Length: 303
Image (cartoon, rainbow, N blue to C red; front, side, top):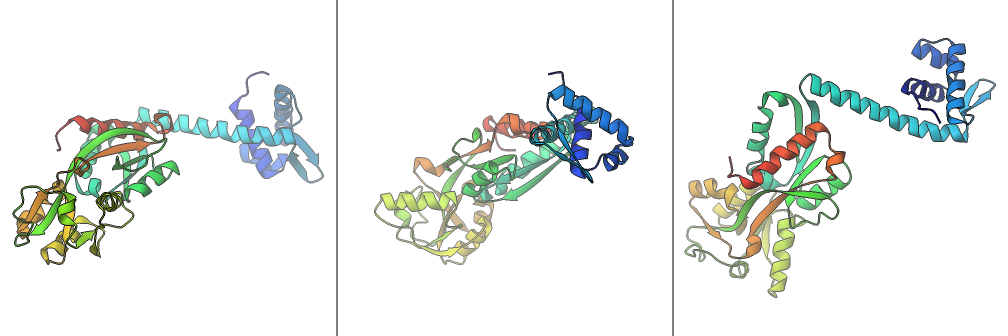
């Protein structure tokens, strides 16, 4: 079979979508006879009849239906090539959707993205950030909702590709007068006799805390559920409960509000965050550039 040309495939798709050679010709500024001749050449190229001539138009044959699917895919690929090459010509362009957990959003991610976007060659890139809990970050990447996800490496990422990003350290936040306030460090077991303020129950950190408590033969008692760490710290300041929070996010509020931040001793309290995606071959040039830029922070101090 000779090579297919995109012009003929584009014309074939237009004929199938309009169901009429005359109307298709009007859309592409060709007379109906020229359209018919071009499609006859296409049928000769593929070696099969592609269209059924009907009283009021045309419809694809079974072979035509097969070619129609492939033609649409090839034309989409051609459009993507044209878009990406144009992006290189005028400075890379594109939109990158990113899903990230509350911890990541509250820590250095905004600074890292700001630094990326300030580079002159990235001035035409747009980044959309959406906050989700770790399991939903993973689900969103699997379903193609976003190109890049950032979550705790304790989440079940399955077959997704991952790269290291940043770390944080879980600590216990308590009022200054609390019985635990004089500790230099502690284990999760030391906190389980007290009521906690927690993040959403299905988040990765809460699932881990409940699992670790279960291994100790206890359960983590919660009094309040909040959606962000500032709200958790306010609950602690009001002396309603204690909280397990990242030191990197909450140290400033703790200092301003006279709270004590005490490190947890367990290995899992040092959380490692990963960048996840479906594969570099699925990423646009803009998304791949962002992935590389964020991955570079895995071996750097926070900005």
